Amino acid sequence: MKKLLALSLSALVASTLAAKEIKVGVLQPLTGPIASFGQKTLDGIKLVYEKYNKLPNGDTIKLVVVDNQFDKVQTVNGYKRLASGEKVVAIEGPLASSMSLAIKRFAGSTKTPTVTQIATNPRVTKGSKYITRACFTDDFQGVVGATYALKHNLKKAVIILDMKQDYSVGLAKEFAKAYKKGGGKILKKLYINSGDKDFNAQVAQIKRIKPDFIYAPIYAPEGGLLVRQLRAAGVNVAIMGGDGLADVNLMTKLAGKAANGVMFTDHFDPVKAPTPLSKQFIKDFQAKYKRLPSAFAATGADGYLLIYNAIKQCNTKANKTNLQFKQCVNNALRNTKNLEAVTGYLTINPKTGNPVNKPAVVEEIQNGKSVFKELIKP
Image (cartoon, rainbow, N blue to C red; front, side):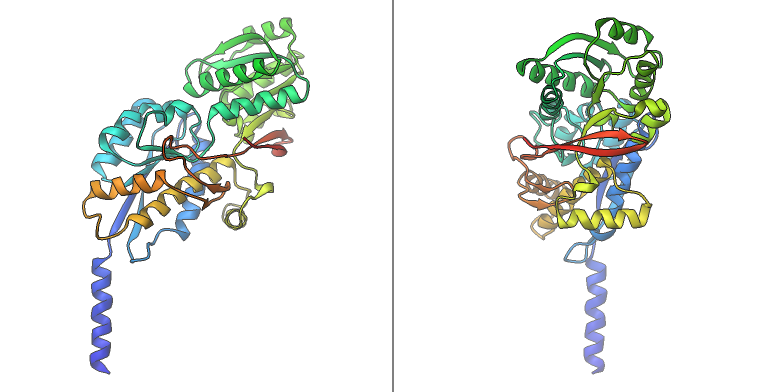
């Protein structure tokens, strides 16, 4: 009996000593103008990480979190630190399209599997073997905006875009293409820059042009101020943006009651949980954070689940070196099929790195809350 106990203890000690720690990088804007997006994303990542941090053989995953401050220099430096200094096997992030484009060549040169959970510009994954996306792209998101407008007989539009953001420029282009193809007319394109606070010149032009629809694929810090100034000037036409306007709290804080009725396309609505895992995630999220999860939390969780699933497949003796491990993880990410996640079941096109057939929701701001309007499928 003593011999058996000794053998069991020896086996347990050997197993514990053999278990290793596998690092996964998280690169998000935790400070700066869109810090709330990064914080919400990290909340979603941490929640699923609590359940999925240990691998079948006893190895554990350690998150290494870096704040990129929504700044390209900080993003590149943070990415290099994670890929080369920390020697992570994969990175989740960056969040925004412009930041993801900034690290694109470094993902290739360091051969680091990278999952951007919510960067929607098509160029992010185009031509890259090492960036995989967990969300739909702007060539679909733009179509959703155009489809909604035309369906509701809103056929004269003004587009407002941020020239400093690849996300904004790309989404405006895709909306315009689909809108004109469907019979809509673009009356004018107006330009802003990140950080602007005075939109009186743009508002005056819109008031003179008299569109029946305003498409504003910009971020919430500028979006909330723009909406407030539009409504104060008596411009009461329908306004829609992309997922950059999905910070409902900030939109309401900046625009007040003027934010009511503003619409945006998004990746997820907790009222429409698409999978059993999604339902449990929403329940756990409410219990932990005392609020419903946003699309940022949901896609953040999805990005981590993609990485965890790939690591689980690759955590074998065959992958001895860090480079071998990373190559296996990248291949597993690119060949993900029907993975149950928070926003739905994820299948990745191995050639493009993009998910297949991801639907979008149209949301409307009402009294400080995001309210589901429509589900639009590819």
